[in-house]
Length: 128
Image 1 (cartoon, rainbow, N blue to C red):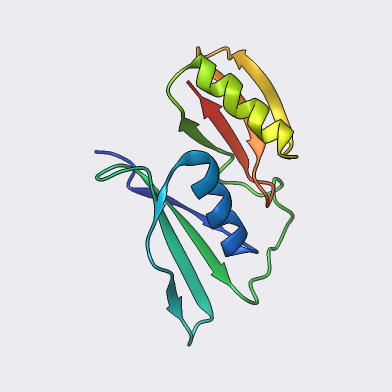
Image 2 (spheres, rainbow, N blue to C red):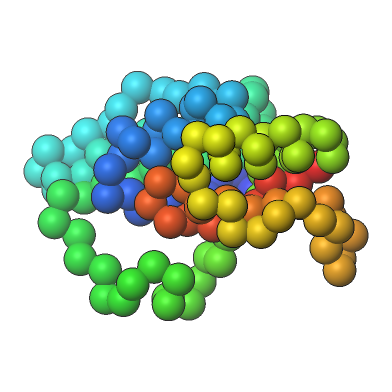
């Protein structure tokens, strides 16, 4: 078994698509649009037969609470292949003006990781 994909509701689906494609080297399918529902989505793939992220948008979707105050998914973790890669990508995010929410460190559960906020405030761990 494996996680096939996780989904993120997006206010700006194009901004998030560009962000993940630029920094995490994912490929992207063609945009799916359901005009009747006002729904659109992209699937971002980490490689053939690997996990994917689905970015979803509905034009008039209203969140009941602010991000970070809801129960449910707390973060996603993306492995970048080593400590040096974690350090380098963290510095790239900092240089590019993104919020570094947690500096590179070895966590209590043994991961070497940092964390950033994507353009919509989703907490993304960068792990070795």
